[in-house]
Image (cartoon, rainbow, N blue to C red; front, side, top):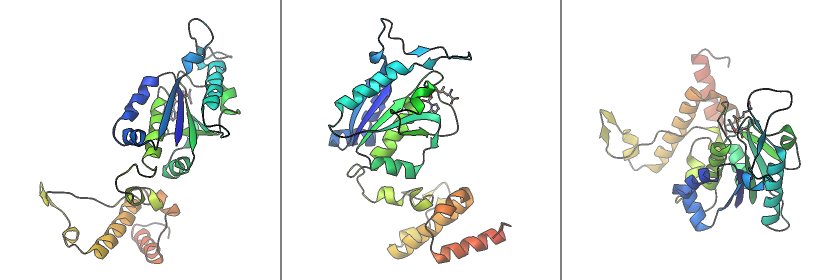
Length: 250
Ligand code: SAM
């Protein structure tokens, strides 16, 4: 997968040399190109922002340098392919695991990071932007951290990046459930013991326990996820019983 990021802070992307994303880069599974939007300013001072029409606090990113940066990226990417361009903005659709999985199936992503009070509106709904994504209902100072979240979330889904090919399949949000509890040595820690079943070596029973715990934890902590979860008829019945017991509507 190729990812191009357009930003005012290229150094922020150095983080991606670490750990899982670093491994994806070393393996060549991920090909990352970072572009400084300031390089596409035309004036001597490399100005990329301007005051908003109609007044108001702060400055906006001017459309010209950003548009030139994105046009440049299209010329240096793979021939005959169009990138999927993502603008990071609090106004975007909320990023979740399903969206990361969809992005990981693309061959070429462009991530557009704003600063100041954001982008001129004409960049939002434009030929430059295919999708607007938010990493949560809060406001950061810039889109760089949001883009790093996207790159890391996508990179660990790429084939060969995680040692154990199973691990993205078993963890939280896959299939609409949170992950079951996990333990490592020692068997006893500050009075807490590892559940006996996990020491039994009986893989079938362990798998069933993990599945039941995943359903239970999701019910307790994120019941909103259960509407989209893949549940067996027995699990659905169990949920009905729990909701009755807890005074729910079912
Ligand atoms: N004035 C904008 C608003 O109210 O929606 C916020 C601008 S914010 C200070 C500057 C930039 O940081 C945004 O344009 C966006 O690129 C990025 N950003 C901030 N919070 C974000 C979030 N939750 N998700 C994605 N990008 C975010």
